[in-house]
Length: 62
Image 1 (cartoon, one colour):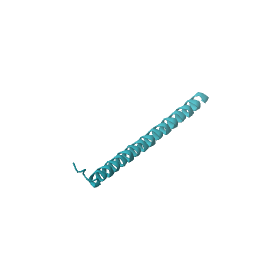
Image 2 (image 1 turned 90 degrees about the horizontal axis):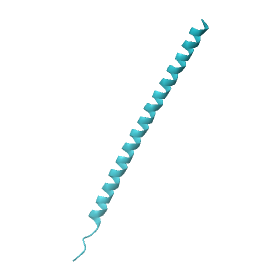
Image 3 (image 1 turned 180 degrees about the horizontal axis):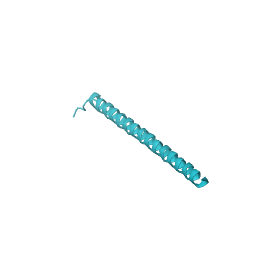
Image 4 (image 1 turned 180 degrees about the vertical axis):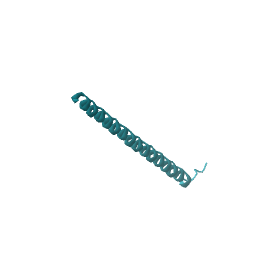
């Protein structure tokens, strides 16, 4: 009887740990996706800023 109890407790513990690990993995992926999107938008805004700066610079007279 004690063996069954301990086995069930161990299985429940392992299931809980697997569920926690999966939730941490999902949270990490969400953070990485948000970070990637932030970097892409930052890069796009920097490129737009650089393009507008290039347009403002007068051409040199040759």
